[in-house]
Length: 384
Image 1 (cartoon, helix red, strand yellow):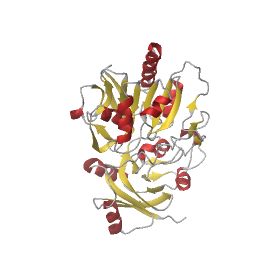
Image 2 (spheres, one colour; image 1 turned 60 degrees about the vertical axis):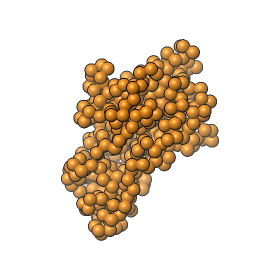
Image 3 (cartoon, one colour; image 1 turned 135 degrees about the horizontal axis):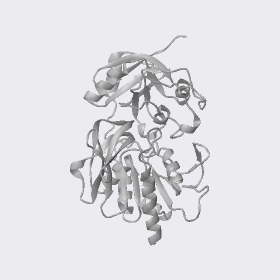
Image 4 (cartoon, helix red, strand yellow; image 1 turned 45 degrees about the vertical axis):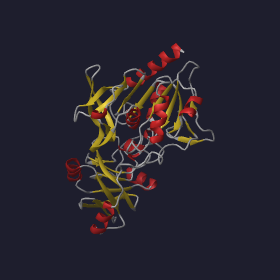
């Protein structure tokens, strides 16, 4: 069987040549890497990767195929996929399609056969770069020129492309969304009237987050990231959840303003982008990391308990410690580089973490945070 060539070009002039798998075409984005050994399906469908070409550091990807239960959104959200070797053999009873076939069906361009170790070393030393992945254009000079013209991820609002347009319902029995006509629908199956009501603001939320909120005994209403404070109040929540999502948090003024307006009214729990937006609403600033934190083995110190958690992470920005306002205290730090991984408001029932306690894929060390959020809401309900 003949194989089609593909090339990945970086803005610094480096070009990697390999073989196409998945869809054919040309895609642009920020080239980054993920150190997870497993969980490629969750990575592919994580909306936080919108606008990025993701490189897997593990040498063989695709050996257990793709299944319908482990999706984190209804389709892949990244721009392109880079692996050392893509396995065409699927060895898992849960799989219903191979990785190459899934990418082809989903329109995702992939490249295999390149030296991913050399690529990742370059990204670690020099930082994430703009790039272009193509099966169509194979001229090195033309590809590098295109890579240099890719807009920086800094300053872009990438959330609007991945958040729900409103009318979406969660079917607890299936890992997918169904379009409905109403603006926001409660996940009410099997709940009692005393369950706290969470409004989950979706900036590109992974599906395992509402699963965890449900498992912790909450009623959940998912709303778009553009929701206003008055629209939240109309839903009469007992707590507000701020989800993960892609890109730079600082351009999301609409989200920051909404959080600022409701902060004193409800308990709030934020994850990843939600953590950054909460910190911005409190007066902090964010900055772009050199190559980001992406993987399922990031060590984080919970300074309150003096315990280390192994965490799943996916972010390219972080809260700047030098700008921390007095109303926030740092609760968690990354043990690799000392960056902020969690904050808590000193006077309000408001907290957030930079990593992903819902895992999927990844460790489960941080599940307790969902229970902490539930307890804050219980106190609010009891006092009202």
